[in-house]
Length: 251
Image 1 (tube, rainbow, N blue to C red):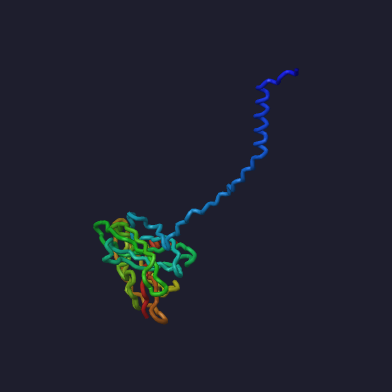
Image 2: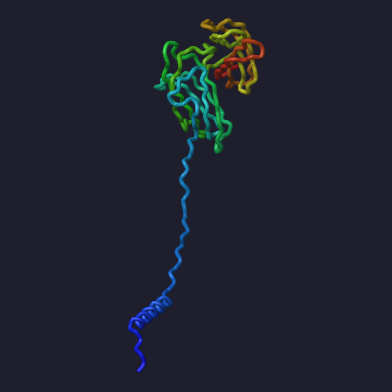
C-alpha cells in the first residue's frame, strides 16, 4: 500500500487552486475619470471712477490736487468740492481722462478757491462723477470726505471764482504772500493765451497783499470754457505757485 499524503498539504493545494481560479475569473475594475474641472474665480468689476487723491480723511491745502482713473464716456469726469453736507459748492470743474470707455484712463485736476474759513479747518467732501451720454444725468458718483486746511496759500483768486462768467475787460484779483513778478493769464478752451498782465509784488514772511488787474481780450464765436491762471516768478526763468480757475468766457 502507498503512503497517504498529509492532509495539510492537500488543503493548502486546494485553497490555492480556488484562489487562482477566483483571480482568473475576476473582472477588471473600470478606470475612473480623474479629470478635474475648475471654474475660474469671479473677478470683481472695477468701479467706473476711482479717486486716488485725496483719500478719505485727508487734510488738504488749497490749491488742492485731485487724481484718479475713469472708464466713462469720452473720459470726461465732473469734479466738485462741496461743504460736508453738500449745501455749498466751493468749486466745480471737469477733467478728461487719458482714455475713454471702454478703456480706462487717468485724470488729474488742480482746484483753487479761497479757503472757506481763515480761522479753522473746514469739513468738506469731494464729488467725482460722470454724466449720461443720453440725458446728462449723474452717474458713477464717488464721494470722498476730507478736511480743508485753513492756512492761506501763497496765491489764490479773489476773483473770478470757479464757474464764473468772464467777459472783457475781466477784473482779476489775486491775493498773494510771495515776492517777485506775479503773472496773470487768461486762456481759451484750447489753451491759447488771450490776455496777460505782469506786476511786481512784495510779500512773503507774513506780508500779504492783493492785486487787481483789468484784462481785455477778444473772443470769436460764442461762450466757451476757459481758464484764468496766475503764478509767481521770484527770479527770471523760475515759475512757482501756479494756480488756475475754470471759467466760462463770454464775448
